[in-house]
Image 1 (cartoon, one colour):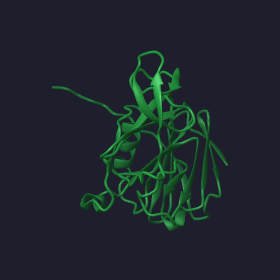
Image 2 (cartoon, one colour):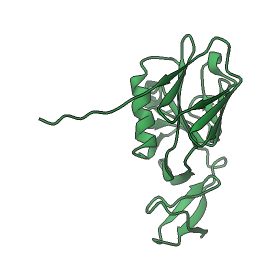
Image 3 (cartoon, chains in turn green, cyan):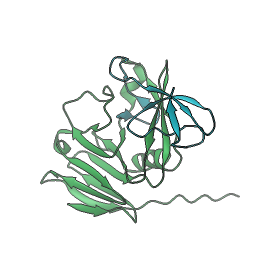
Length: 157
Length: 51
């Protein structure tokens, strides 16, 4: 099924987890900083940006993470394998023209751009970017798709 | 690319991620690019060459 993302984002909700889906609106270089090197990935308008929360929780942090990557192009900082802080992190981000959800990969341990870690209930989906549209294949029966909008208002006093 | 959290928890095994060296033809920036269409991280230009 194809959805327009012209006016916002898609929230794919399972019973205990969710996936937030948006598309890149401009070309940018997304840098991934490791302890030893830097890799820069070219992101094109229409590429899929997905934030997965395999353990669920509030949507707002995922929205913020989406905007940090999509609008502000923040570099992604990489922790070394088995870093003690990794257990504090419960959301994953993936950016690519096409993204597959999978529960059979270890969270945060795969560099392939077309995979994102998900819960069991949201595994097996394929997200394809097409301009401001996204096509979702193999949507699980128990998953609900909702449109979601966010805006950031700043008031100085 | 799968990344976790605000900062990111991701293991990038050197044998699985091999960035290709590029040089930007517009600003001269040198960087390691991944993906099919590298973009200069300094000036956002696609006019880059393998270094």
